[in-house]
Length: 314
Image (cartoon, rainbow, N blue to C red; front, side, top):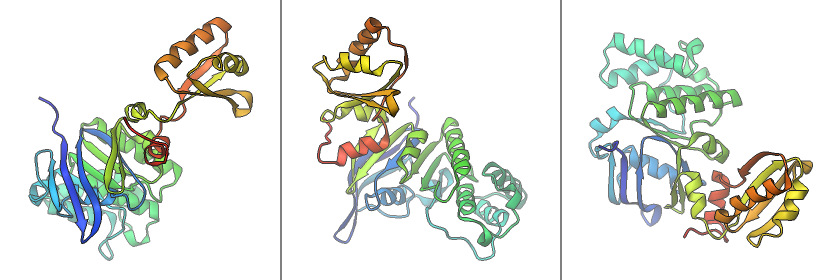
């Protein structure tokens, strides 16, 4: 049997006459899924709908078989990390987590044990007894994540969870997200820093104007874009030689030396012909190649292609 998924079918949400999301249909498998879009695109609305915090105007949602209108069941299997701070006055990290866990049915002793395990996992063990009001922005992000994962949910919905973290903290949290996904969980992460989603995501859902414009792996989505030439970066010992030969190919529309002469950026309109042709050039010239990597198989480039004037999906 296939793994249970999060299923969204023909989902719309209107705020009066204002469109939140419009006829969204997606299937989200286990793993890390990045939710991509600028402010106002519908990301937070979609997350709130998944968590049962909003009711849809039309359409349906199933989170591992549970609709959001069954909140007691939904909250057992889902953890939500909001981008906004809201904590009980005077709460410490341990007290906040123990309270959350008792709401999930843990007895006091089990809640205490689990709370200490979770603050350790998010890197807050040394500050576990301090008041959250005195925490830095990065520490508050960590305790919100701890609250989302403390009851061992199968689904995590994380809205801008890396905001306020320093580079080391971001790396630690990304490793944590990847570990949670490896455990078979659904981890849905939004971030306005798109290169972070390249590091995080197994797949992406790209939203613009309340509608999904693409979904799937970055490579697959990039492969569907036919109106933008594929960009490939070649690092080798003689980029000028490769450029001279590449210009003879009718599908290569640009060859440009980059990185102070250490690399060559090529743009091709036909990826299926380009890579065999590039291999023949390398073999015939004896050029020593360090790397050949796509230069625009990333979230930022793909999203720009899709919503820009020149982008399109076949």
